Image (cartoon, rainbow, N blue to C red; front, top):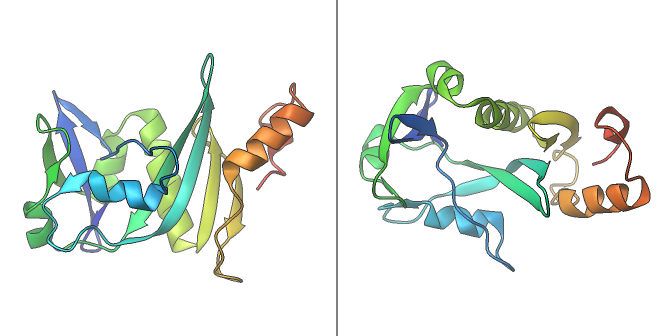
Length: 169
């Protein structure tokens, strides 16, 4: 979550830095779920749009991680917030320091999201590697669901590699 123009808001839990996150329940939009991650914003968190989605195949299920862009907070707004996990502290760090301090997968997601926001795109990742971007400038419509694109491709071509899937939305 951006703070002013040069900082990001991260959570620190037991010495580890992480991007504030939470579950997306069945039938719930990621933008709606984002409202439950940080508490204390008087008028809620102002979500602009989805900027990236990362797909990871686990043993028996697929995990989708959505990165949403919010309107930048002021330092005063950030100071009022608490993370949904009360054991964590929120920190405001310069963007370069924040991204370099994150674990590799989170760092890849945040960097892809920041680039997609700046370039007016939607980034699609597989296990932290960008395999496609899609412009959101032209129509203003919501990009095609990555879940449907990935499921369709996996069902049709189960042995495709990441580079061979680069034509997916």
